[in-house]
Length: 544
Image (cartoon, rainbow, N blue to C red; front, side, top):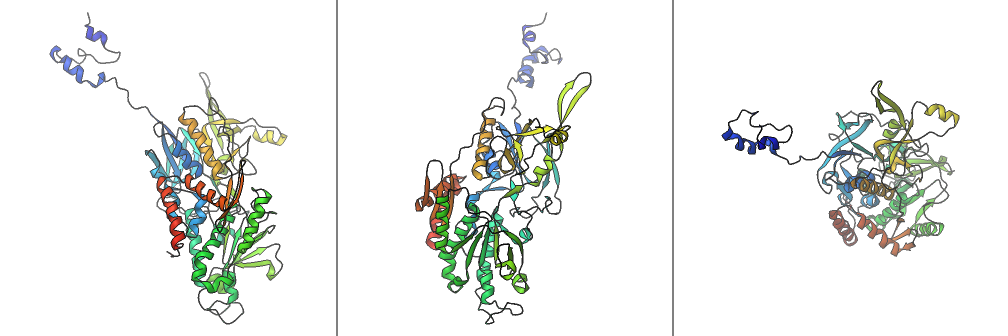
């Protein structure tokens, strides 16, 4: 008859008799045996891979609970950029690191990060192919794909595979060039911290180059080494293409920099300085109502900033002779300009005209996704072939109101599209798309930092609560907190559903809002300190 001790053992636990131990050793062996530990081991946390460290990717990783999920970020840059203050860093009002947040210092710790480009995704195996770029120079420069949509050729990095349980695609978008000749080669962009640094160096370099005595000859600088007055006038012409908030704010920040700092250092060059904003639309700042947009244009006119609407830029090329080869001057061909062969000279062109889809999005939308639909005991696994849906106008992946990537039946999509029939869309399991690379089918939203951050926070909170978006969660609802734009001279405009502000009051709101939105307490402290330093002692003018 078995003893009470043997009867009380749980199923599968080895008894002393089975271990052939003597009775005198049985109690000691049982107590020390690991089989009698009823403590549960740590539960396996789901791996959530986030592609991108911009507003959408970083905000989601920051909000997602590290206690419930393993957060893994894959991005070519190891930091987040607070883009609303990027223009301020490009003129020295703020230092570059005051608007950067290292990915590896996310709140909560326990963050995994792989620096590289997501090259491909196998949705059936739930794996991501990553091309590493940590060995390259910091990937902080805007890379604009050529018209074909492929990233320019470069040395391939090491390739690794990473598995996921849930995938968040937040790889953002690229600057839109509309295929205009010379933009990729000669224009400056303002989307990353490396762009801001290059812009600052170029502005300071142009003033330094023009500070030498002028060539007494009034003709073009074809064989002399000294610049003429006409050369200096061309080099100190700053052209901004795009009349949205980014272009307007950079023109305003540049004006303040020249008026408050460079004008005191190079007073003899002020007659040559010119800032011009070009836009193809009938008016700039189209997201503001007419009264606020007119106020902005009136303020620019008083500051001497020209705004030329309905101007179509057709080409950018290097200027002829040494002015182009040695000094980097460019010639801008504009359809509406009649004199000088339709070209305007400039020392630099800052390009801010909109966004185009990330090449990865086109690659994903062009491939079939094989998904196990069901398993039949007789015939085996049934495979369903699907394809991600891409919006034709914006190039983004189409999502539903729960940020789930939508797909259609790949076997019948071509035939039904030819017949003009609506395709049935189904969400792809465990795949979500947020930020600039997404397109909400029911409620298309602008590609702004505010929209990307709200989408990220919504999705992270849904996952933290343990709900499955689309089944037992709430739909995403965008809440518009308003739009702000700095106009220079401590003036700004602000528009929301609640109110409209302009002038100094709007400027105070502009600075206060950006200060409260700064991610870390470190930068919330550093940003106002550098604002005060720039006001008291001037902006930084060192080139390094």
